[in-house]
Length: 590
Image (cartoon, rainbow, N blue to C red; front, side):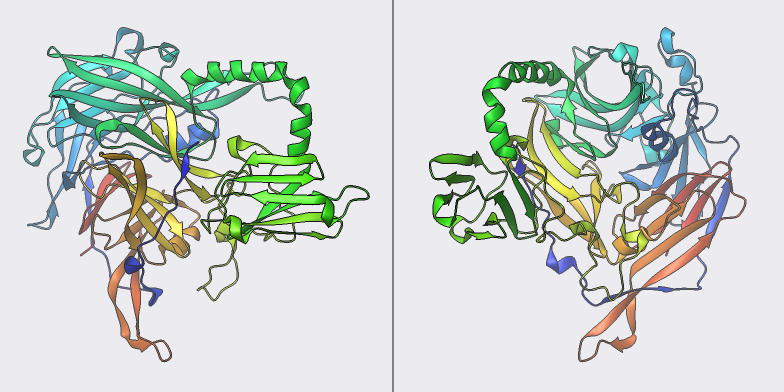
């Protein structure tokens, strides 16, 4: 059973005296650089690729890849299948000339069965894995490893290795792939590239009178590309699949585990056969387990941040003296005379010394105090057993925890506080140990998905950004190789009040912040770019009543002209680069 990990904020990073952002009329210089060839943008096949997963993949993919080792350089693929560098010179305060670093037609390098591009093929994806290596996926079936040389000198890239993505698990039936994550490690003096390759797969269902003759899965292939005897060998090792969206997917250092965040269950495909066999075995034993299942379902439960209430209906002609309740830290036993009503392990741990029970309103009511307050239990019993949580109980707030009004916000709940189409989703961050195919740790995020991901340090996994009250918190993976059982996310930084600010922006396409967290951008697809600087100044001496001086951030509104659709965004400490269908836009932040 995976351990439940709690996100713990570093109180020293939180600014309690931050009072929002003030609109500034100061102009942000925007330098435009016209493109000789438009960026390549893939289009979905409307006859087949009409699922929500496809829309996320084609519409929200950032086509401008920043170089983590040199943040003022970014790269994209143009319509001529060339790799292009966009660079900003901080000494002159001007952008460098756009440079083509690879002129070969990437499409022609693909395998014979995928040597052409058609409508519905995915976008190109670039991932920098070191100061001199970069991996490209052509969106069809080909991976290419480049030696980029000294990227500061814009040297021409050279192809080291290439392969066609084929393997077991029916991967040869899948045509299109994109790179979720890619990592280079040196294991026992051998170079090894770990890849998480994503594909949206349509699965046809049996005919149904209600319609819906197909469904879609997000497949994430865990692959290994290793250098053996001077030859690069590629192999797909296993596949994770989910029916929902994946907001985050990254390897840990040394690629021993894969961290995945999604709104639906994520499972290994290699384990599905075993699960089906176990399900079939359970059906055979149904006659022997009906009584046990009825006992498990013969109660209701609800929860708050601190405790859990379990209710049983009182049997006829029974009173308090006929019932007996015993609890340990992780187990509950309920008896009526000699009849066992419930004897199961709990999903989490409780404080058995604070357990109370009473008879009220013709029901037995048991109050269990959680050991870890503030963490919601998706199930009452271990192994996902028992009935679902009752949302109509008197002890349960009718508004989920993630949607309750912020304690320090003097305003009523607004529509923007409710995540779009995600009220009933359960967002979970899971840590999958790759060797054992087991889930070692889970983090429960409620119904609010992560706001965005960003690269803070070269060579490290991407940071995950979540809303915590009105703020946005940045989390980095914290992993100790000598203590594999200890795993958590470290609170790395804070974007003051940004969690509430971004919720009101319905047209946002890209969000990113600078590595030093001095600013954050919200970029629409066509019209506006919103710039927020939280490290601005104090409020010219304004103070809370009998309190310390308050801090106010700065907001800038940048209006885009006839620049075309925004296709990509990258950030550095003092400049941001925006890729559109016509231009490269350089925003001089400082």
